[in-house]
Image (cartoon, rainbow, N blue to C red; front, top):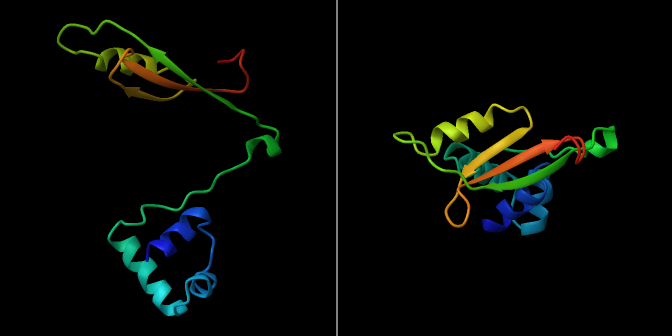
Length: 113
């Protein structure tokens, strides 16, 4: 059954009939496995990945590690919340180690980042 999920993870558009041929079981069995996996949240979602460069909308991602002093009574939450309001911020993570926050920034080019 894991083989079915690996095939779908590689290409979510693979049909049950194609999968059935690849794993040597019936298409109806594949459909049943997929349906059950969707219902019990084994399959969480299907995702499309866009080649934005092909559409003329290239983007660059940068991971910036930040060390900050936590604020009294709120810790890092208030600082992270303020950082997240910037339009270039794609996501922010609280991390342990040498840095406190990891910020993922998205921009059209390095100058914008």
